[in-house]
Length: 291
Image (cartoon, rainbow, N blue to C red):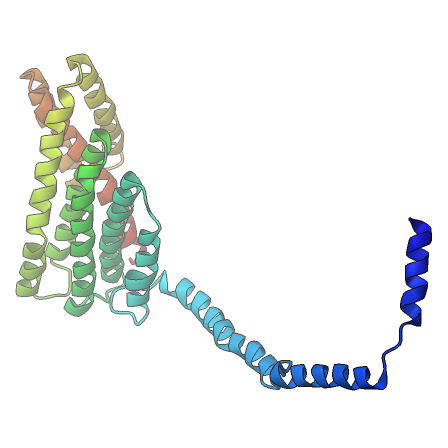
């Protein structure tokens, strides 16, 4: 086998083309090159690739700081629409879980109300700025109400109770005599969110009724006592204030409901009071920052 291969290699090296065969081969190669030329590299190709990246790099270098700056924007600021219409919409797009989606929209409603509180704390509130936040509040409330039917009972109770408390806090901010917008503008804002507040409250009450059917009387009373204890602890820090009077009245009503064995009403009362206390405390902290 090896001898035959060696013999073949020697024979190959002795093969020579005639002059005629060389001309035919060269002509065939030249003809192929004419019909199938090699692609020429454009002098613009490197320029195109390199400089096509420039707009992208500029966009990234500008958009990242812009996005970071917009997170602190308040209604009426130039960057506020970037936060609400772009960044928050992008965040919402990537939320695929129903419960997380509902919590996200609840957070947006709360964020909008706190933005209004910050405007008031800075003494920069005006109808145009607050109305910009108001429109965002209405949109987020609608999204939240739609999402509530997709979450479990416990989350539905918590989110609907929280929503009524947030809306109530918003309405209280608008009603405040020190808020620098005229009465008819206040009425417009308050009325604009009233239907959503009623819807949230109805969802809350209906869900509580559905939930307590699966709880024993002892479990309900334990839940009421836990939330009542949180409120009672907070009352010690709010002595002789309007908030303490409101919370004390709520605890007394809860106690009366328990004595009458009206557990569903007692549970609704204590949950709403607990959420009211939470959001009111947070709003008051924001207002105090501006003093």
